[in-house]
Image (cartoon, rainbow, N blue to C red; front, side):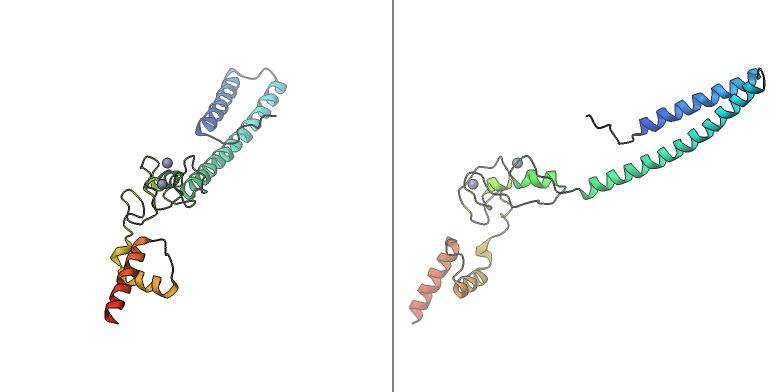
Length: 180
Ligand SMILES: [Zn+2]
Ligand SMILES: [Zn+2]
């Protein structure tokens, strides 16, 4: 069973308004032409009452349409996070009004810092290094804060796969060796 379209458009209320206007002009001409008898007059009276109710209904429909439009524009503004059709971060952000709905990984190498994870047309570098051109991690350069990196790596032994940190550790080791 096909569901009817329940969204009220302006064209809908305009069409109803024309129908109501048409009824009003028919009743006006009916009265101008004069009534045959009391029954005819009573019938006209009944139609006038129907017209009054139709006008009231039209005002309600208009109010419903405006409320619906406000709700729809609010939903569009807030927007539930949608699953974009593309796996890349740029398409995710474009589909979600500037918000990320998930972590994007390069489908080739599986790295989040690969430039291809940021934009589907970028080439895969096979690397998860921060600071790669075209990656949303481009501005994130671990070498800019060697002190922090060294401290973190030294304290917890974390991120051993990051070769910049490894090099920093090597240098630290060399310096330590020279000092001793
Ligand atoms: Zn994409
Ligand atoms: Zn990649």
